[in-house]
Length: 270
Length: 246
Image 1: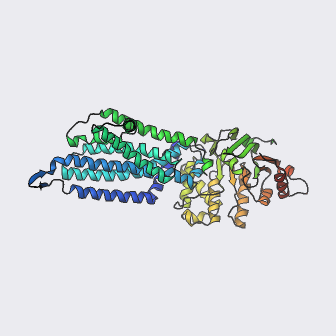
Image 2 (image 1 turned 90 degrees about the vertical axis):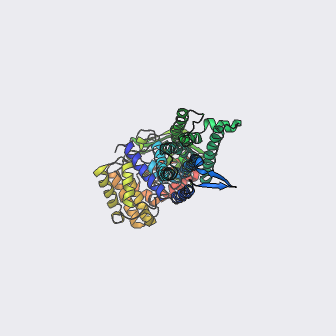
Image 3 (image 1 turned 180 degrees about the vertical axis):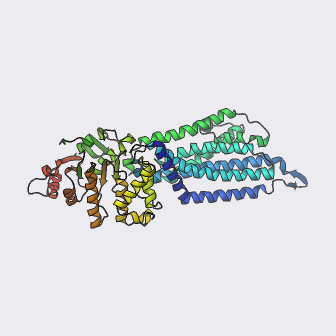
């Protein structure tokens, strides 16, 4: 028998996807995503109305771009956080129940195994995300007349951020309990997005928030840039730089996972 | 150190491993000779499972080296042609018996028709052919252990590492397990059996290593380690009682 790394990786990734689909957490998160989509349907149903406030006509159509951007960005951030939540125990669980050790007793590299588990968690996340963001983009297009291009770019940025935060969550899960890891990921996603949003609005950032804005995965900046066309204005940041930073995180975070998992003493965890 | 005349399939050379303040292995030297059946014995906490973890690349030694078929266990290629039956076998409850074996056949580097033949052979050998479509969760402890054997025997590995192989098996299962081990040796495989069932080891193994307090207390061919008039159990109790702390 000679090792077939690609065949082994594909077999493990398929198994990881099946594992992810079977989990109750995945079902719960998919249900929450469906509820979020129903919320979008409800929110966008009154978008084109004209109100009268204290006798003054108020044309809500002026705010459709902002509404669309905020809704879409929140959903995209939810997808990124979902990635972290699913990844936070997808490798750790396999180590705890012993199935990882059985697979690693075969001629399978630890890097391949970790990447396959990440792929399993991401497949569920990105599948759910595609339905959620695709549905939201369709509502925004049909009801607000917002073009689809920015939504597609936003979904791409969300996918890159999901890879980065998913891999970071999986790495953290090797050292932290599941709930702590999931909470840490939620805090990290919100903090990164908030720091980016504050910087884009021109607010003065303290040293910590400035560091988060400059060095964390720029999920907020990337999403804002992607859907800025809906506002009809340019943002004061370089799209190429932001996308390059996000792409770099999407490469470095899985590389960190592989590196850390390769050095982990699995005997201590068994 | 007792050096075996034959080439080693797996060797532990001056291996030390600590977990915090506890010394699991304190500079042990022993080997699984090629084509032999080696019984790895020792009281609980003697370091048997740690020795297996090092051979499987799950842990790294703090000192010394381990080689599996001449390779560093960190090299995944060292596990090509290696079968492992863990002491605590974890099976995914939703997986079908045959499906789980097919997955492991692919991980072992088998493909296509050969993989299917090996899966069918493993199912037939371990008496699980009629259970092939059932989920792992439906298996009793004994049947799950048979599936563990099927996993370990998949692809006719050259090296078998079996941790408490008869755990959960009924007398018929124990007899079958003995036959599977002998058959593996018959085709040239090297087998390491880590066990507390000394009568079974005495019956099955031709070499023995007794670990005590993280050190090798005795090792060699069974006929040399067991004194005349002693059983393996007598020898075990004697050498473990005399073993100094690591």
